[in-house]
Image (cartoon, rainbow, N blue to C red; front, side):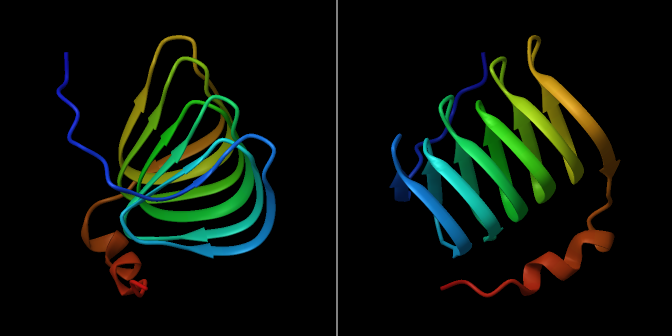
Length: 124
């Protein structure tokens, strides 16, 4: 079993929250509601089981248990848990797909140097 590090959440969109637009954050953000637009961070995005996201996503890491459509670029890791339903083109160094997760799209496993442009994402 992999030991998970403690996560400091900057924000949380619970069920019943619907948001459209551009979202930037530091530390970690969890979405259990609905989001449409652009998400940008060098840190971790967590999509809970009830989360539904249709977005252009550029983050450091993303963990998905809900529904995601769009594009995902993650500097470090994309992890799809058993309840994940993802229709996206993914660019990342590490892709982890748990048994039961659904993934439709493409994945490009990029090297560190080809993803350096993401480090230019400003922290707020």
